[in-house]
Amino acid sequence: MSTLEIRELEAFLVLAEELHFGRTGERLYVSQSRVSQLLKSLEARIGAPLVERTSRRVSLTPLGQTFLSSLRPAYEALRATVEEARAAARGMGGVLRIGFQGTIDDQLARAIAVFEERCPTCMVEVAEIALSDPFGPVRRKEVDCAVVLLPVAEDDLVLGPVFSRQPQILALPARHPYAARESISAEELADCPLIGVQDGAPDYWRRAQSPQQTPNGRPIPAGPLVNTLQEGLSLTAAGRGAMLLCRSSAAYHGGGRSSIAFVPVEGLPGSLLGLVLRRTTSAPQAHAFAQTLGETLAESPPHGLRA
View (cartoon, rainbow, N blue to C red):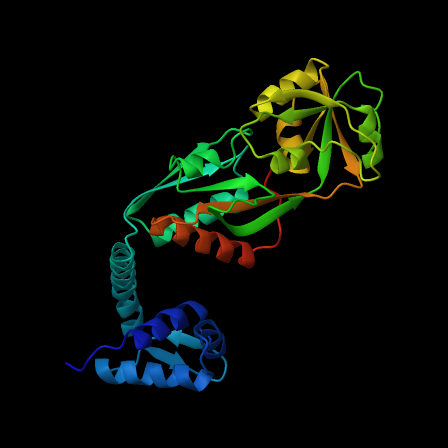
C-alpha cells in the first residue's frame, strides 16, 4: 500500500463539509487546483472515485460516504494523540494555577477553555486573589500567573497580554447627593472620600485604583482601606466612602444593591487588566497560557472583563 498523506485526508474531510472546491481551498490556505490534485491522489490510492463533481454541484459517492464515516473519528483520534504527545513533550502535564482579581468573564474563560483543549493533560485551577495583594501570590508561587489590574511595574514580574479596557464607575452610597446623577466629572471626586486598598500592594498601584487628586490637582479625601472588593462595597453601602470600579464590575455587583448607586465618571483613564508571570518562572504552562490568551484576544473584538 502506498504511503498515506495526511494532507490528502484533510482535504477530503474539509471538502466533505464544504462540498465546494473553492471554499475548501480557502480553509486549507491552498488553491482550488491544489485541492483537486490532493483529491485525485487520494482517489488513486483507494482505487475509486470519492467525489462526484458537475458544473452545478459537488457530492460524495456512496464509497465516499462510507469512507467519510470511518475516516472522521479515526482522524480526530489521531489529532488528539498528536496534541497529547506535543503537550507532554513541552512539559504541559501537571497543573496550571491562574490567579485573578474579581470575576472571570467570557474572554478569560474562553482562553482557559482553549488552553485545556490544547493541553488536555494539564489541569487548570483558578483562584481569586485579594485586591490588596495583586502580586504576592505570583511571587510566593501560590499561582503560576495572575490576571491583575494595571499598572504593573515590578522588576521580578513580566507583563503579558493587556486587555479589557473599561470606563470607570463610582460606587456611592444611595443617599449621596451624586447618587441620582447620570454621570460626574473626575473633578467632582474631590467631594467623595475614596475607599482605598491596604498596604499589601505597591503605592503606585494603590494610587492608580484610588487616586489622591483630580486631573486638575484638587485633593481627593481618603476613605477607609480594604483588602477586598466586597469589603469596599460593604463600607460604601454603610456610607463610609465611595469606590472606583470598572463598568462591568459595577454591572456584576450592582444587582439587588439598593443601598449603592453606580455613577459613571468622565475624565478618568479607563482601567486595564494584564497577565503577570514571574520573570524567572520555569513553568512552561504559564508561558503557554500567556500565548493562548494573546491569541484568543486577537481573534475576538475587545470585550469587558472586570476590575
